[in-house]
Amino acid sequence: MEAFELLPEEINHLVSEFHSIPVVGDLMTGVTQYTFWMIVSAILLLVIMFAFVKNMSLVPHGMFQNMMEYGIQFIENDVGKAIVGKTWKKHFPFLATLFFFILVNNVVGIIPGMKPGSGTISTTAALALVAFIYFIVCGVKVHGPIGYIKSLAPSGVAFPLNVLIWVIEVISTLLRPITLAVRLFCNMFAGHIVMGSFAIMVTLFAQPLLAQATAANVVGALPSLAFGAILLVIYGIEMFVGVIQAYVFTVLTAVYIQGAEAEGH
Image (cartoon, rainbow, N blue to C red; front, side, top):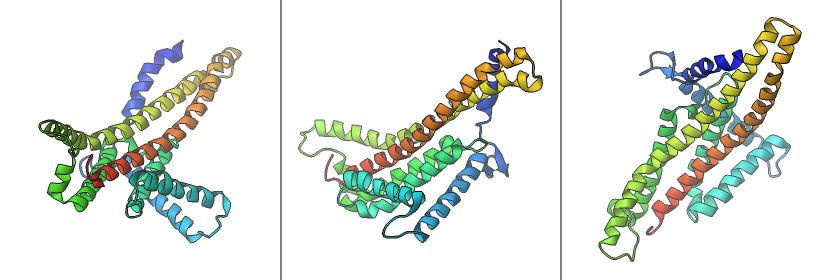
């Protein structure tokens, strides 16, 4: 069918639209569409948090307040207390900010016409670098620079096995920001490509009918209904994936913080 013949070209065009394009200035020093929507997401998050704090009460009222309370308690109990442990209070602001910032970016990026800040590797790499520096600084504060380096090797392991494990732990620690960045980027990018592909299929099959209403074109446009239904399902899944990826990023950061502050791995 003609729609399938046009699909490869449309997919290539779709992928090209995800390239960073400057909206202000040039690509090196200007603001790209991803940076723009990341700024929009940050402003939106500030507005949401301001509205939440302004209307905060002992007993939450309304869906918005209850959802925010649930999200904050979720990070406090399931991430802070459950993973970080006794020192969770001092890390809670960082972990909560990380979770909600990534979440808002992911959700904003799902809206048609918008680009998620998490949809480019440079943004996810910056987030991962911030998390990396944070848990390294936490480890150094607890153990001191030399003590933290020594703590990477488990206690009670005889030489030379402890040296081998230490080298593996050092490499593993250095790889953490890379895995954090790539995991978030790949999941969000792949999801948007899948959604875009099904949206293209809906358009390609519906175009002849929109151009001319004939019986043949009505029959030819029927597959667009199926692709549209699938697209709606994928849209819901992608919303769920956006929440999960924000959670996974935050949980892994909490695990790294706990490990950095522990006496020995």
